[in-house]
Amino acid sequence: MNEDGTFVPADDTGDSTPPASTLPAGKKTPDPVPYSRFQEVVQQRRNLEAKLNEAENARIAAETAKHAAEQKLTEQETAAAAAVQAVKDAASGNEQLLAKYREIISSTVNDMTTDWPEEAKMFDPGADADPMVRLEWANKAKLLVAKLQPAVGGAGIAPKPAPKQPTTNNQEVKSSVDVKRRF
Image (cartoon, rainbow, N blue to C red; front, top):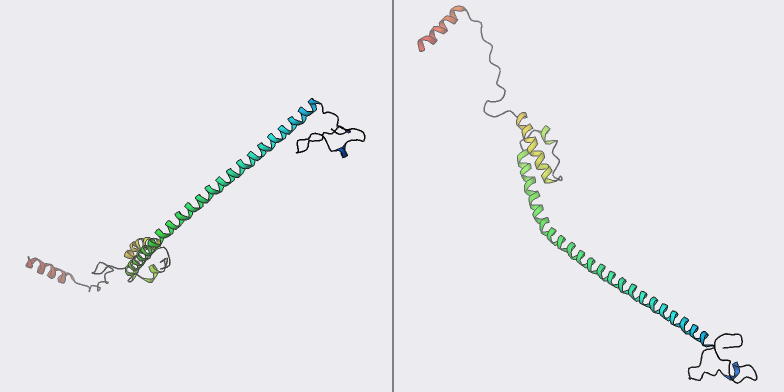
């Protein structure tokens, strides 16, 4: 301990005697350190070392947790990328099939509507529309077109009959007699 009361640690050489340059003139040995002060300093050092060890362990635990979280995130990203690729691969095969079905549905609707009147065709969603929407439209419009178009084979509007010529009672009686003779 120095004259001002501060503690001076011992050298690494094992000699506890401070160098002569630090001692006041005329003194050959330093004043002894009270044992209670020595114990106090040792206890402070142990407490600081324990706190340092706790902080170091907390830092290591935080780094370990961070590394584990990063590794888990990397695994999740890899799994998600693989799932996306699988969906893309499955979708590419489905795209070709979907294009084929779109073409078939579109040609079916076009064939169905070729002889329809323009009034019905103007409500067609168009070839660019979703094929299922277009097919649904065609099925609904088919009923309307059936009402708009006259049926073939005489079930439509009949021609007006020729006006009857005025007849006399004699002519009516003759025609009724002719009918009776036939039966």
